[in-house]
Image 1: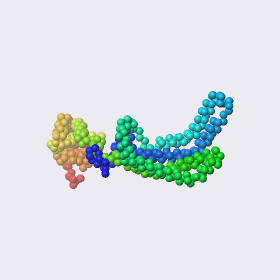
Image 2 (image 1 turned 30 degrees about the vertical axis):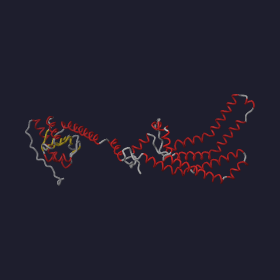
Image 3 (image 1 turned 45 degrees about the vertical axis):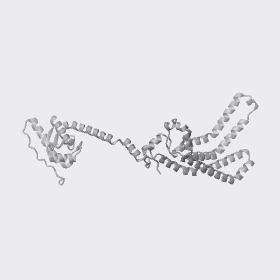
Image 4 (image 1 turned 60 degrees about the vertical axis):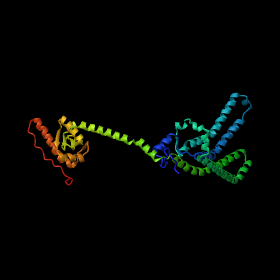
Length: 376
């Protein structure tokens, strides 16, 4: 049965990317102690197997140097300290490669599952961590039962592998007593590393079971209810009323910019009352006339008022106004099928402007032809 959330709904939805990211910030990432133990023991066993002889040789050399000391050096304090320092450095040099291998293993193992995660919040003090009742609850929970089962399984598996291996290597182990000390130590280190590696490999089986379980358990703990998903989407994308307000403000800003462009237009094509489209054309700079503003009803009225106040020509052509409004976009060129009709209007406007400037007669108004859908 699915777990229930605080609002009583079942947690049936997979965690979102935001939920996973927030959980990682809190230090909640999938972790497998069995995987960490397995990699540490396997690489440690391999280190002993391949570096055991070198470490034994270094330790033997340290012991020889430590016991090979003359009577005069014993009574010379500085010589004793020099010997001690030299022995420590030789021993440290012997185990340093093994220590480096272990450090690298411990640091990079988390990358196999969950990745690195450093969270101050996870390190913060929480009273529930020292609460005995909470502690007993964790011990006797399903997770505690799972840990107990894993511990018993590890013990049985490792014990069986160890007993079988020791039984097969009994002659090798008993033969160490008849070998010279240096040979026996080297051979013993090899047997120890091999046995350690074989026994550690048994943990691969436990890890192969535990890793998928930890991934599944982590996903189950972070599952969300439908309401939580909806709330997160609102927080991420914005609540509907907020988005509506933002769109309204954006439209107001766009309309304000549009109205500011009306005084620079060459002509306003009107319906005459329902639609208004402001056009601008500079033949030296533009390939086609540009729509700088348009609107209907109250917006059209506002465009006409601004145009009249700034002396922009208003040209009544209802079919052309409707066609421009339906097929054009602000700050874009007019559609190609309206080039001829708009050219007639602009030619008339430019002729009218020149006639007024020179005191000539008003040119004849053109008969605007607007192609229908069949003519396009």
